[in-house]
Length: 81
Image 1 (cartoon, rainbow, N blue to C red):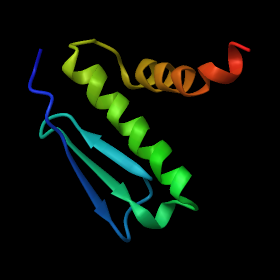
Image 2 (image 1 turned 90 degrees about the horizontal axis):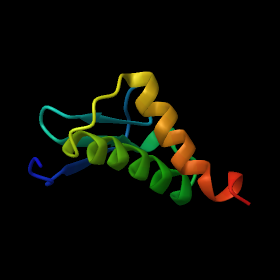
Image 3 (image 1 turned 30 degrees about the horizontal axis):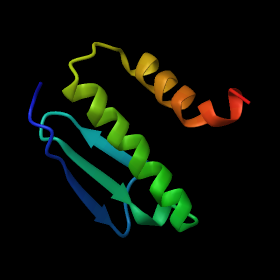
């Protein structure tokens, strides 16, 4: 297992993305201006952290598979009821 340390940077004004994960440098950038609430911000941080967890566990997925996996995990509480 790779080193699990990660850096999270928050930038006030950013690009089109709400957040982005860079596996090469194990860094997350969160763009604050793309969020409407604190809860929204936390969801983006969790989303990007899941990308990191998938990366350090050595799973091999393409971008579509990874996004679908994260989507399913995010909605699991609601879909399992």
